[in-house]
Length: 196
Image (cartoon, rainbow, N blue to C red):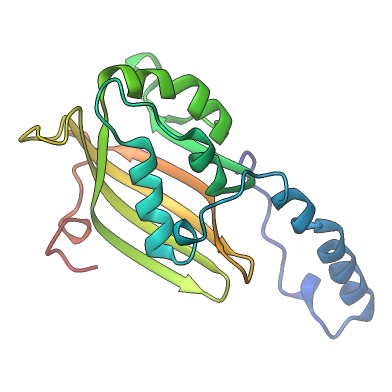
C-alpha cells in the first residue's frame, strides 16, 4: 500500500441504504480483476494451488548458488497485477525507519543480478498464518545464507505476506519485510517451537 486511506465508518457501507449498495456494486464491477490478472506470466498450477505452495515457490525461486540464473518469469507469475514488495530499513544508517516500495519487476531487475552473482538461499523457518474467505496473511520468519551449506545465516527476519485467492489460484498481493536487528530481535513466538 502506498497510501493510508481513512477507514470508512460502518454507516457508510450499510447495506440498508440503497444508494450505498449501488455505489458498492459499481465499485466492485469497476475492479475488473480478471483483465489485470491476465497480464501476468502463466504460473505453474502446482506453485499457486495453496498457501503452502505459493510461499514455498516464493522462497525457492529467489534461492540458488552463485552463477545460477533465477526464473524471473516464475517469480512474476506468483504476484497479482499491482503487487508490491516493501523492505523496511534505516536509510543512510539514520535513526528512523522507512519503507521502500518496489514492484516485482523492479525487484527482479534491481536485486536479481546480485542474487545470481553472490549466491542467495532464503528459507522459511516458521510461519503464522491467518486466513479468512479469499484473503490470507502470513508472518513468515526467514533465514538467509549465501550458500545452502553455510552453517549460520548472515541475516534473518520476517516477511509479512498478504495473499488473495481468486477462486482459481493463490496470488501474492504484497510482501512487507524487516530484517532482524539488535533493537528488534525476533520474538520467540515467531521462531521454531515458539507457538503463535
